[in-house]
Image (tube, rainbow, N blue to C red; front, side, top):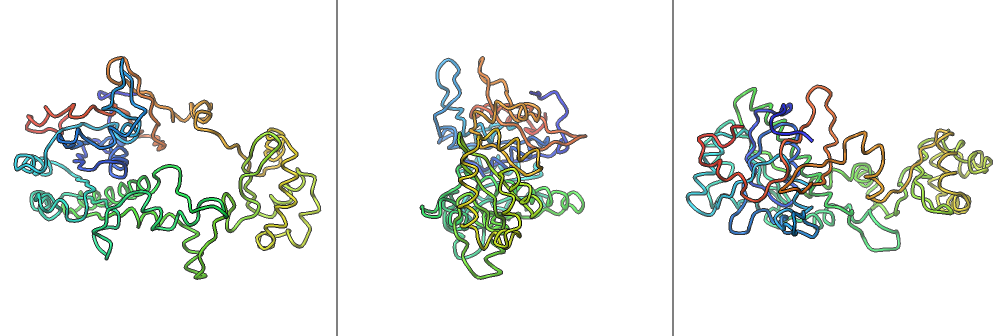
Length: 396
């Protein structure tokens, strides 16, 4: 854990005015904050702040449950200053414009056009600050026939195709277990904002960065998207199987499950040797990856019983020794007990209200010269509103 007195990182001096809430925008601004930016998070006094503050349990316990700090809120809101501003009021609008004039970046996730009625859209704020980088996150983006529709992670996963690829082949379409459309949209937004910031610093010219949940979700269907565009065919749900590599998936053992990812024919030969099935590697049905794809079911009927007869530890040890990619399927409690997580700093504890410890997840970026820092824990609602009385509320 670090504190506000330590060096702030590669984005030290960058000022972010955060008008976003829920997950996509806050994911983006937390990443900017971890990299050293000063982030003022604007929250609505009428609603008690970001909706996710009440998305629990679980909540932080400081004697009793603190419903101002849910786990959901904390996951995306460290390294931020919380200020309460009513943007529906004239005074609140004037305050936002004052802050925008000092900011490098503004980010919001209102419906397209939703801030125009308050005079806080890109056109209005760029008139106040021409070098401003203004990021808008929405469900479908600022253009197109669906621009006015609301955007939620589940809807984006459905509309953008990932649910059609996920789940058991005989089951219903399945969402990813976390709000991954929101998270990936926030990360794309962060990349776009930093690219626009570099341009602004070089030219003095700001711009509008328009990022949509659905666009982002479509982009990270990656190879399946290009498979579809190449063939015109809809991919089939395969559970944990891979569309282009066999064998690749989660396999039952006598005492659990292991993940096996056989990426080439050499690995397949070694894999078969560990299972005592060396003849499979020269069988014309299975000798090459294209052949294994064509004969997926026949190969599974041979491999699955062989692996099911072995203990997970024995199979894992044998495949590791043979240089075949293999790994466990861990629960999240097991994940955070590993030495690897400790070594990589992915289990982060920060001091919270009273004597409470806030158990968070660390940033995966490891920069050798300008590392991320954890300067402020997720704030209580409006904890820094008194900063608005300063001439420069962003000043450290």
